Amino acid sequence: MTILEAIRSRHSVRRYKAAPIETELIEKLNQEITACNEESGLHIQLILNDPECFDTLFAHYGRFENAVNYIALVGSGPKDEVYERCGYYGERLVLFAETLGLKTCWVAGSYGKGKCKAVVNDDEKLACVISIGYGATDGVPHRSKPVSKVCNVKAEEMPDWFREGVEAALLAPTAINQQQFLISLADGEPVIKAKRGPYNRIDLGIVKYHFEVASGRKCK
Ligand SMILES: Cc1cc2nc3c(=O)[nH]c(=O)nc-3n(C[C@H](O)[C@H](O)[C@H](O)COP(=O)(O)O)c2cc1C
Image 1 (cartoon, rainbow, N blue to C red):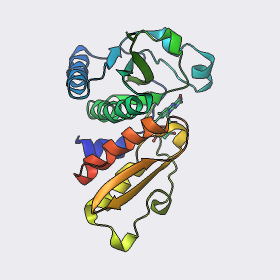
Image 2 (cartoon, rainbow, N blue to C red):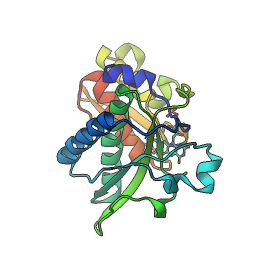
Image 3 (cartoon, protein in one colour):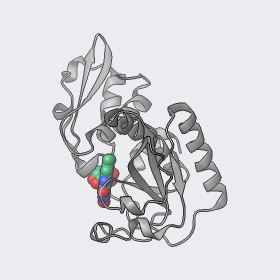
């Protein structure tokens, strides 16, 4: 499966099989996490077999099941900037996991932040986590806004690469499926801005990653 295929097949999965993740897949995930940390300066960590982090009322209410593995997104710097970077590299890991046959869910609210086992140094913040494991389901496609609500370029003025980027951006996971972003063109270059909403900076990084993979263009 390619990353583009992963963009189409990925949906949030909150119920997992009880089976532990195979050693070979753990190694591949850790290699990709190391590559992300080297490139971004983040301190992303994979935590395995920890049932406590999702043992909260919110998690039960959100119907998380067998959620015992997670990727903790940790980094230092100004909050907005760290959150965006965590979104960008976290989504790279989500899509990589999908190519390995693992299912994921971004989680910023339905977990015990104080129970998270990741190392968070004094100058660092824990942005959120991503639960990961073998899916008990494949999830379902989310309801999506129309292109005109997230993009101010007229359909007839869109280059093909831009349309592909926008379509992939609409497939991105966002907090409470809010899709609070605006994609535009400035001097022929793509620009994506966050609109107001909870965790909008994490969403922004996620959406930029989708747009860049599908369009082949770097965006601001
Ligand atoms: C930053 C962020 C935070 C999220 N936090 C939670 C959460 O706390 N609990 C939860 O059940 N889902 C959470 N989600 C998952 C979203 O609800 C989900 O991505 C959205 O509804 C779109 O569905 P999809 O991921 O299946 O495409 C979060 C997603 C993002 C991007």
